[in-house]
Image 1 (cartoon, rainbow, N blue to C red):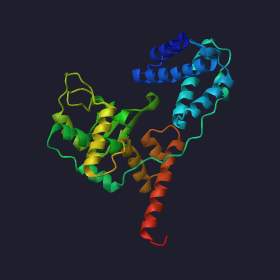
Image 2 (cartoon, helix red, strand yellow; image 1 turned 120 degrees about the vertical axis):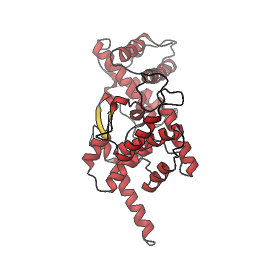
Image 3 (cartoon, rainbow, N blue to C red; image 1 turned 90 degrees about the horizontal axis):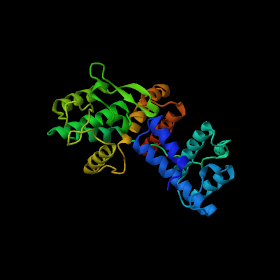
Image 4 (cartoon, helix red, strand yellow; image 1 turned 180 degrees about the vertical axis):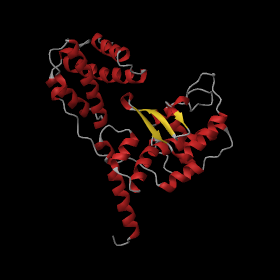
Length: 296
C-alpha cells in the first residue's frame, strides 16, 4: 500500500507540474522499491519514508547495488527520492533534506550508437512509396534524421508545428522547452506527400504522424517500425530510432560543424551533453585510419 506522503507527492506532480501518467508510474514504482527496502530493513509492514535519514538512504543505495541494479537504474531511483524529499522539505513535513549526502554510482561511459551516412541513405531509400503508411514512414525517418529529433519530440508534432516554407518544425523538448528545428528539403518533400494521404480518425486530430487507425503514433510504434526496417536491410536491429538523432549529430561534426551549433540544433541545455559526440567522431576517425593503413 502506498504511503500517504507518496500519494501527496504524486498528486503534486500531476496537478502542479503536469506530469504524464507514464512519469507518475515511474515515480510511484521507484518509491515503492524504497518502501520495500524500508520494510525489509526496519521490519515494519507500513514504514514511514519521511523518518529516513542520510545514513538510511546510503544503506538503500548499497541495497540497490547488492540487488544487481545497473548504475543508471540506481541513479534514477535516487533521483526520484531527491524529488520526493525536496517536495516535503518545501512543505515543511521534514526538517532537513536527507538526500544531501547521497551520491550517484559512477556510470560507465556509453558512446551513442550512430549509423554510417551510407546506411542512413540506404535505410531511407529502401522505404517504398506505394502506400500511405510507407509515405508516413519515409516522412517520419527523414524528419528524425533531418532535424535530429528525439522520438518523443517527433510523435508530439502537430500540424501547427510544421512550417514547410521555412523548412522548420516547432519542437517541444525536455523540460517543456521549445525550439525551432530545421528539417531539410528531403523531409519537407516527404512530409508533403504523407500529409496529402493522411487520414485522421477525427477531423480535429492535430498529430502529424498517425497510426493505421488515424490516431497519434506512439514512441513504441516508431521503435518497432524502425527495427523492422533495419532487420529487412540486414542492419543492426538493436539500434533504436534514436540512432538517427545520434547519426545527425555525428555526421554534422564529421563535416566540420561547430559544437555550439550542434548543441542548439539538438536542444541540449548543457554543452557537456553534446560533447559526447566529439568522442564518437574521434572513434570513427580512428576506425577509418586503422582500416586505411594495414600496419596502423
